[in-house]
Image (cartoon, rainbow, N blue to C red; front, side, top):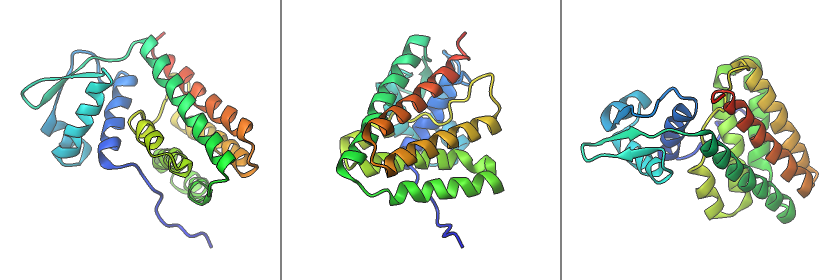
Length: 213
């Protein structure tokens, strides 16, 4: 019987930042819209403190502009920003995979997430986004590089769902790519793991760019 203990997720401030970043990337939040601290916290079901911290992360990335009345104005993404964002992510996450192989780091957390994701796709696929997040988070942790973990946590943007793929198709494609990455990690194939993760993130970039055509 599977040990179905919970998967590990990012700290609340990074989850809040990723939720807002995802909404900006997918254009659910449009340039010029105002985000109020309290109403955003209520919508996310969390306290105001992590949302304030999330606003600071997003402002540093140039996605929002902070105002003095506990609010922020959405600045948005351009196609160039999207490409920059995903290529930086791809380079950093691919490097994390190579580090894991070269250092022969433990794969226990990553394997646990892969097993749980297989189960959730059969039983409750709408929960898959948490397992998607956890897979990447476990890789960053396994790299053992604290600064890399922090940078990637602050770049996370949730699902990169484009216009031509259903959520169900996206979940299946994403998990198949995760399985391939994990196979390369188990084989300690540093180049293969690097290339598999890089391709995974660039595919996400290409999906999201369908919203900017």
